[in-house]
Image 1: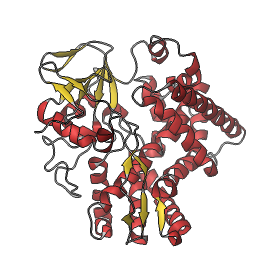
Image 2: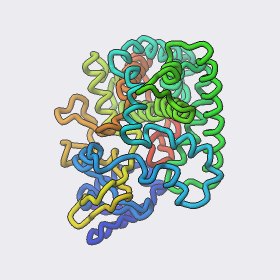
Image 3: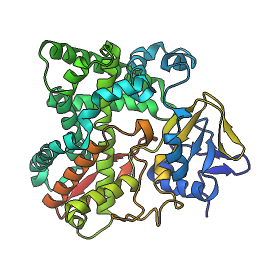
Length: 414
């Protein structure tokens, strides 16, 4: 296995030096993952200051291991305050602190139970006609142009509109919700700048005010939307606090579109790069489903997800995480592990070894997975049926937003 000029790995100490902003890595992270799989799948990534796992079995097992969790020891606020002055992030931290994604049972269990019913497969399936209609309407709007950037023109509006409608906020606010979300998730990039932090805080404040405004409207006139469900829901006689309500709504709106936008763009790129008639991948419902599953494995929209150790845990021979330490689970690497997949870097819908950690696993398994799958199936099938001559107009480039993984733009023509 060749090494890479931008990657240094000391196998004796398991120390990796790799700038996540390195252009070659941003554009092809899988080359680095290939080196790590062959040499050292458990390693300490110097730039992130934490141990990482790249193997499928390690990642899958750790996601389910209750010795690890999302909740920070001592709680979110105590943990972030220990890092120094964060007064400029007060609104961002307030929004994040009540998110079910940052919590463990019993609070996580209570919050997740409130929204889970809306995302089960049988409920989500009712949204398929809406997703297909949106796809057709969007294509109607740009089909005559013979050229489009599919990220803003197609990949973004479908999930953003559907989650806004589910939540009960105006669908036309979708672009604003996307902008706030984009600002907030930049906080999870490597080494965000002060400007990024201040913008994330401003957007979190505006997002929170937006949710509170619409929550007040729903209190006066409840509907059958998710926001009304969150307001009315009781568990053991307790309602959600205002902060829990706002955090939960922001999480659902952000998670309801962010990863799906990236995955739609990644999937279109992947399918077009296979050559031939792309509609062959969508010849039946079964083929459509298997194609989407392979897209989710082959080029996932989230490449890193972290956990905190709650006790001393040996994660590799001689490598023991202490309570409170973080471990990074590299989902994109796990999905292309040669120990788990035949020809892992080959796009093979219907492969016998189909599995993925793209949606996580365990109690934090993505609550929106059925919705994301449905939106991808509907959008991709309609797109390639309507525009069978679709082709890349330029080489797509990934955004420098590791650990998220999505395209800057996706220029196509037909």
